[in-house]
Length: 141
Image (cartoon, rainbow, N blue to C red; front, side, top):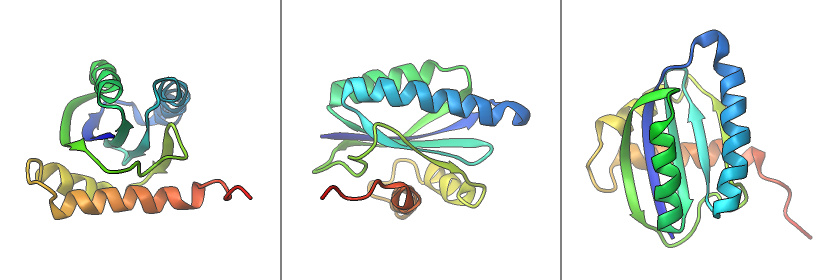
């Protein structure tokens, strides 16, 4: 299992952001499911932060597509490598929402880029998991 976390700067006009994000989520959900990739996406109003997880080749292929997307720029991978297990196994992509509250956490994780297992990166990953928790489908019986 391989995981990658990136942060990028949004180029979405504020009046079109909601519709564009709906499009991103719809396309990405289907693409990720077909590739066996799971993860979470966060939008702060100025930045995207996303965690992708799955087989390394599939994650890197999707990341290459994301890097070419004209709706954002300054794409920085802040963490990548093998992981023991998926964190978002229930979703091909969970959009945890537009959160200006999270902007500071995303900025700190970006500034910490390169520090292995840095505090700000752990906070960002915890935030993604916590925001996704209420969206979890009920356990199967």
